[in-house]
Amino acid sequence: MLVPTLFVAPGLALLIGLGVWQIARLHEKEMLIASVQAGFNSAPESLDKLLAAGAAGAEWHHVRVSGRFLHDKEQYLFAQGPMGATGVQVVTPFVQADGRIILVDRGFIPDRLRNPARRAQGEIAGQVSLTGVVRLSEKPGAFTPAPDLKTRLWFVKDVPAMAKAAGVPALPVLIEADATPNPGGWPLGGQTRIDIPNDHLGYAMTWFALALALLGVYFVYHHSRGRLTL
Image 1 (cartoon, rainbow, N blue to C red):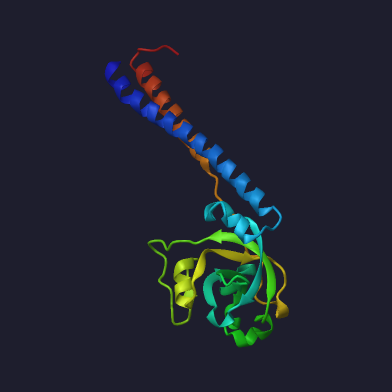
Image 2: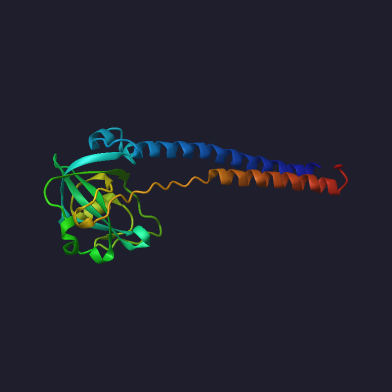
C-alpha cells in the first residue's frame, strides 16, 4: 500500500489546500463586495475628502463637484448602451473652481450622435455641479485595441493617456456621472455597473469534489485487490 499512498497523499493534500484557499478567497471577495456596495450607497462627499485616503479608497464612492466642461477636448470610450446599442461614453475634461482638472464620463451616446453638433443641447456651458461615482484608471490589456487618436476613440479607461491626448493635466481618477438628465437627453448618464464576479465557492466545491474522487479511487483500488472489505 506504500507506493499508491505516496502518490495519493500529496495530491489529496494539494486538492484540499486549494479548496481551503478558495474558501478564504470567497470571504475576502464578500468583504470587498460589501465595501463597494457601502461606498456606492453612501451620500456624495467632496472629492478632496475622498482622495485624502488615496485614490484606491475613493473608488466606488459618490462625489459632488462643481466647475465647467471643456467640450472641445472630449474623448470617446467604446461602449454598449441600453438594449445592446453600440456607441461611446463621452469623457470630458472638467475644470474645478481651484483649477484642477478631472475627467468626467458623462454617459452613453449612440454612434449617430458622436458629432457634438447633433447633441448641442447637452454641451452645457458655464458653471455646473454634478454628482457621480469615482473610478480608477485602467491599464490596457494584451488584447486591448490601440486607441484611434484621430477620432479620439478609446477602448479602456486609461486616464493618464486620455488626459495627455486631450492636452490637459488631469487627476489620476475619473468620475462617472449619475443618471441626472442632460439637456436634450444626451449623454445618458448613470451607466455605472457594479459587476464583481465571485465564483470562489464553486471553485472550492470543485477542488473538494476532486479530493473526494481521488480518495474514492484510492479505496476502490485497494478493495479490488482484496485489501479492504466494504
